[in-house]
Length: 219
Image (cartoon, rainbow, N blue to C red; front, top):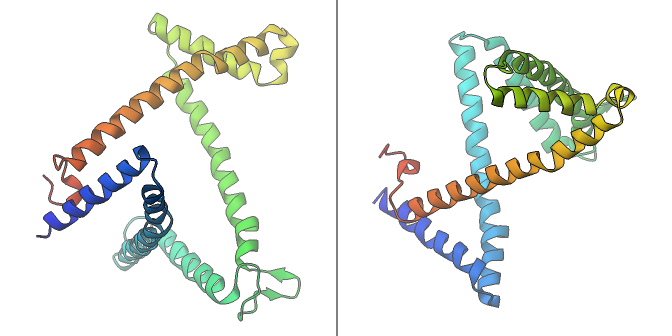
């Protein structure tokens, strides 16, 4: 019963969601809107609670056992609790019951997001550029003619994105744009088509009850 009930619910909901896409009827469209706008929001709320609870439990365990990187877990827990308290009691922009400013210093959720989270995200992405450059240097080895084509096209694209490429020759930015719009777009569409077919195959396997690993049984 523990496996059959979730499987039955998944099959019924999957058929309803699939049928509403192919049956242009007000009942089907209304059911699809209800499933998408109401039930999915409720499920997402429970999933968010489970995810946050699991996150906190894992980091509490790391701090308790002094595992590797446990000081970072303390920072995460303190930041999570402080942000949650400020968001719940102080409101989004400081209109709640909890004072979220000391003089000209504001620490409401909007300020935390704009002054702390966005700069941290920008820092991570700036570091990512150096990791990508390092990985490209290690990976782009001209061992075959395909690797030579990849290396040459990557060099032309990168050179066409900076002013130096236009100063060398006006043709370089045009070739760079052509590579991004024609071969790159074709490759992206092929990848997206493969992903779509893979998702469709997985959906059909789950809907037919062939794929049951999501039940947690390991079968």
